[in-house]
Image (tube, rainbow, N blue to C red; front, side, top):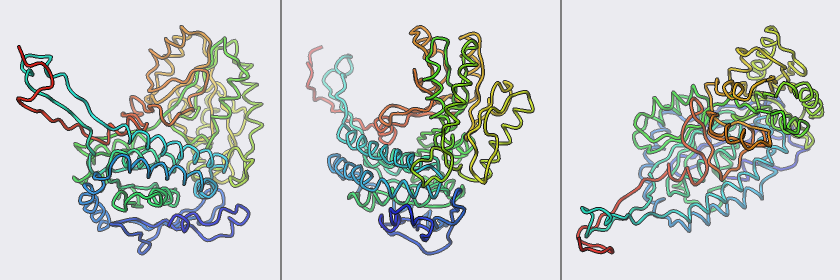
Length: 498
């Protein structure tokens, strides 16, 4: 099935090819019949994939099958799970170019960024394999208290059972690899709800794991809209839900889920601070490169850059020069830095918010226009503090540059956001670094880098409306497993005299 979904890796013939198939996987069967949803590529403006849309019957079938399959998947030894995940990692590297091309077609992401995403998929599956081998438990010190004398207690981490993975469009391959890889490493069966914007990429990742040797009972895949996600969230058979997406949708997921374990990685409005002692040229280059990656469609993309006032003018000039050097265009061209956004509606929101900021007194130093779903990299200089480009999540090809005078005040400005996912800080002052780490209301701080940097084996997640829980294989396996305790009365490996 993997080869059927990915098709030919030849870039020069891509536009002439038929749409990719994105079948559903239910009860061990790939299904292509029934209603189809067509995905129109935002750059090529033609149908690039067709997905088999789930109905109510398919949802119920998937949930029942997952419930009955959970024990079979849990019976697979951790070493066997790890070996499968290692083969999946190798497969991700082997099919790197085909995946990148499909990502470019479905989402308009530049092919070089798609290749980078697949490198991360390979790393993610490899880390999940390593974590599968580390799953264990504890011998508890019960004899340290009088009532525990003469007893022994142990724990181990058991699979939760049925996991639900709801993934977003912006990094559809790697974010699914995180959820599916960690869930399988933990010994669960997983139902994947794919994003409508990237159905074929999602199907290909599922097929990749199966091709690596995962049992068919380990995963199912459903396509559809919010109604499908809501029905899955409400199903009592689901033990744990991992969701990545907007804060609004995350709240809906929580309401539908009820009393289930949740891992929510939601929106962001990431700030990066450039201090007086920073290397301005370096900071500008990093912020320009990471502010427009994937057209800014990342929850940690550089959105607000606060620059110490005496360095502000130099930073604006350096940043503008770096942005001007970015190549905008065909995502299938290996030289392209900025492709299209996910659709024209998203692109229009970006240029509208830029125009609103300009009406409030800001300067649009670059961009502020779109062609279809492609937004020219937009720089908004010194917008009002209450402008949408400052207070809301842009999730697009726009960076706002703002001057600041006092370090404590800029920390407060960063914290004024309802989001708190990740922040960046350029400085050599260890005092400022520690202060920012302590005071910033974010899940992670990147020093001498922008907010838009992530290592897939390092805990990642936010506070406030950016969600809760942490996404790295080790952290996710904790969420995907339950602690089971064994207490042996009258049997002790410790001393028994009181």
